[in-house]
Length: 138
Ligand code: CMP
Image (cartoon, rainbow, N blue to C red; front, side, top):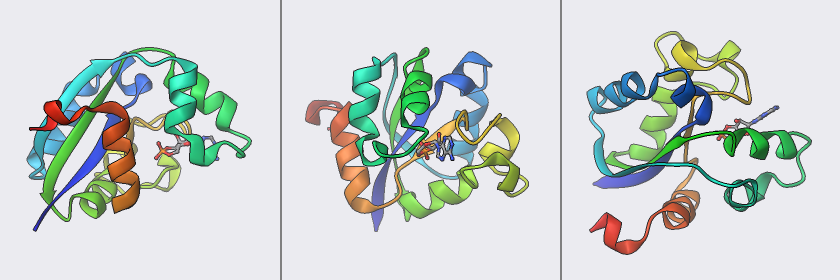
């Protein structure tokens, strides 16, 4: 059964010109792009997106980074999309990411780690709804 997940090509990867290469990896892995947009978000909007991390020491720096320039927000679909995207992304810290994963290839640090992917069904639902309206997903 097909499943949807939410993903961001983060500002570091966009700035370095890796957006196209990352999208190619995603399509090669069998994901269908349901919706996609280039956007820049404010620090307040980044705080709303990452509210689950608001008590973490890295929250101020993470939200400054996420509002530092354009990013690409997208909704992706395939069977087992949530787990499969996280596998394709690799570990949060690129130093621990497996060979061949997106973070191993493109991430610079644990914070500037190139790509985001939802970690569960409920977070995917929240994250898709945070960035996309219903008509964009029809
Ligand atoms: P992401 O998968 O988008 O989820 C939360 C983000 O917080 C994570 O990717 C990283 O960008 C960032 N992050 C997680 N852990 C740390 C950390 N220890 N230090 C700095 N940033 C972190």
